[in-house]
Each structure stands twice: as structure tokens, then as C-alpha cells.
View 1 (cartoon, rainbow over the protein chains, first blue to last red):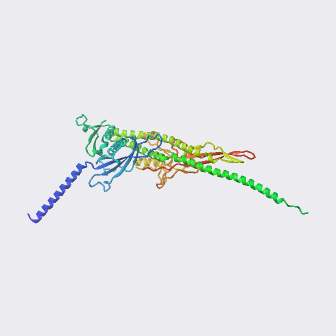
View 2 (tube, chains in turn blue, cyan):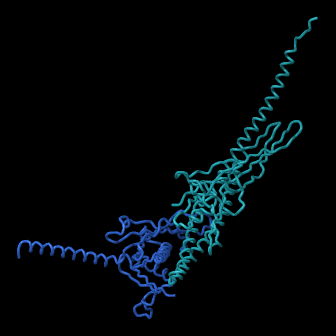
View 3 (cartoon, rainbow over the protein chains, first blue to last red):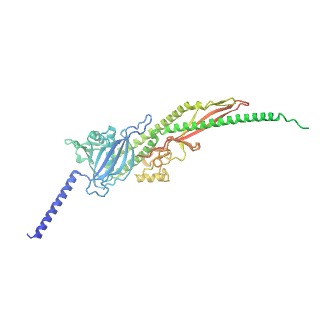
Length: 206
Length: 284
């Protein structure tokens, strides 16, 4: 083997090794993030609202929905930066209002994750109900935009309440031994807690 | 023959003094009346401002106006999504129908609360005006041997809005179809402010046309500055012809005036105070 041949062989080996590493990293990225986008739902109670005698509009909760790309590299230079999609307002678990800020500029066909964050750490039941309703609105908006919801991440302390609230929208828990076959459902949602520890599948039942 | 004029000056001076004294008394009476009237006007303005402040205490009217505009956008969006889903992705039609029902019920709840707020704000404003009036009403009586201004008549309080004051709600622009419909309906001012005009019932087309979205007159912030409650011209006051929220107060303060010397006459001295409530905030 002459000098040129060995140099080419070394270069090829480095190239193969680099490509392999890149491919492995990409695959790992896909495993860690089996979704290209995140819709983050930030919830918080808004104090000092509708203060008048006999007001029923107490416990006002505002949820902000923003989206960003998880792809590396992102589809557009700015898509990795969160873009405010809309704000939703609730009182005592009842939907009150919407302020749409931007269109849902998520590439059609991409899968998404929904992430719920309580801005004050813990959340009262009203805030948890608001989070569940915001999730359902995000699910519908994602379907309208031809996006599949791969997973829904919710705070551990709110996991049960949010799961129960989602079930009010004609969803039932997927139990391995039950006759409910998730493959027969037209829409499945997968809840996981943050931090990890709890998971639940919910199948849409008519 | 030379006339003796001695003593004329004394008579003339006496007459002059008497005339001067009478003129002084008359001038003093009118001056007192003028002073009392000025104080009454100040009191009427104060009473109107006290009531006006109460109307939008803690920005409750501003918050209601803003939430009604948001509710309208939520119902419109839910209705549009539901229609699309029923036609295209029918498998989640039940979910979108539930979201629409929730938005619809939220709008109905807001309308109930808006009417409740209308009553509460008017009652509280009336009470605040009456309380203040009881404290000050006796300070305006004037009693002179020849003139009396007393017995304040019961206050007359009216609620309404101020002409040419739009709402505090800036047009929501996130839904193109709704923005276009609002512009076509004339719900939004055509100047640069892009505020919803006052006292409208911005109904939605379609299945949600049964809902009321009533947006009231309320001063909007100017460059983030929220106007305090302030006195306005009486002729800018307008009574409401619908059940919109009140944003202005007019108070009629009245004293009975009577003369005591000579022919007794009776009249009334009136002052009208008008004020517009504290401005509302724009959406957060």
C-alpha cells in the first residue's frame, strides 16, 4: 500500500466514523425528542380581577400557549425561539376568552409535544382544569393543522386532575388487560409526568 | 336775591350714603349668592367625581369590556374550528363541539356578570354620592336678614356615558375573518386608535348570534396614561338607551332661595356636576 492509498483509507475511515456518529446523534435526538415541535402551555392565576360585590368571576386563570421547534437544525432560523400563539382565560374552570397573537406556524405533518408549566410551581384545581382545557384546545388546533400530538407532559402534582379532565372529552384510559384496543381508537393521547414517573394512555371513545 | 344753600350738602351726603349703603347691601347679597353658587358648583362637581370614581373602581368596567372582547374571539374561533372539523376531520367533531359549548356558556356567564356589575356599580356610586352629600349639604346655606338660601332639595343623580368617548378595548387582530367582519360592521373606530366604538352589541354571525357582546364607553389609556375620573361639560353627558355599563354621572344640586324684605320671592339655585369615570386599562 503506497502513501496515497493509506491517506485515502484514513480519510475514508474518518468520514465513515463522523457520518456514523452524526447518524447516531440524530437517532438519539429522535429518541429523546420523538416530536419536532413543542406547544408549551404556561398557566398562572391572575389576581385582582372582577372585584365587585357578588362577582362570580373569581379564580381567574390565564394560560399562554407558545410553540417552538425541537428540530436540529430548526426548520427556520427563528422557529427555535418560542412564538406566542394565543392566551386563554378561564374562571372557575369555565372558558372565558381568547387572545390570538399569531398563527400556528408549525409545519404540517410534523409531530408535536404539549408541555404544561405552572408558572408558580404548584397549581390549584382551577389552574389544573384550565390547563386540561388548554390542552384540548391545542389538540384540536394541532389536528386542524395536520399535526399529530406525540405526547403531553404535565407536572406530576397535576397529573391526575388533568387526566380526569381530559376524560370529560370522551377519552378513556388505555388498560393493557381491558378490551379497549388503542389501535381501534381514532385518537390516542399519551400523558407523562414531569419529572418522569407517571404515564397514561387515553383513547378517544365515542 | 342770594339763596341760602347751607345744609344742602348734608342732605345730599345723607342721600348719597343711604344709596351707597343700599347698593352695598344689594351687591353684597348678589356677591354672597355668587359665592354660594360657586361653592355649590364645586360641590356638585365633587359629588359627580365621587360617583364616577366608584363606577369603575378597580377597573372592573375595563376588565369586563376586555373580557367580553376576548370571549367574542373565543366563541368565533370555536365556531369556525367546529365548522371546519365537522366537514373535514369528523373523528374529533365531538371534542370541538364540547369546546364550542364551553365557549358559548362562558359568553352567557359573562353577560350575566355584566348585568350584575351594572347594578352593583350604579348602587355603589349612588351610595358614595349620597354619603358625601350628607357630609357637606349643610355647609351651603346662606341666611341674611333680607335673603335666605337653604333647604337643599334631594339630590338628583343620573347615570349615562360621555359623548365621543369610545371603549377602552383595542381591536383584537389575531383572527383575520373576525377582524374583517368587525371593520365591515363599523364596530371599530376608523382613526389610528383602532378601539371598539362605544355602547355596541357586537353580535357574531351564525350559530352564536344568540349571544350578546356589549362593549361600553370607557376612556382608553393614552400612551399608557390612564385618565383619572374628571369633571366634564354637562352637555357632553348622554343617557343610555340600552343596558350598557355606566361610565358617567350627572348630579343636580339645588338650593331654595328667598328674599325676606319687601315682596317675598322664591326661587331655586341649581348646579349641575358631571363627571366621567376613571379610564380603563388595555388588555394585558
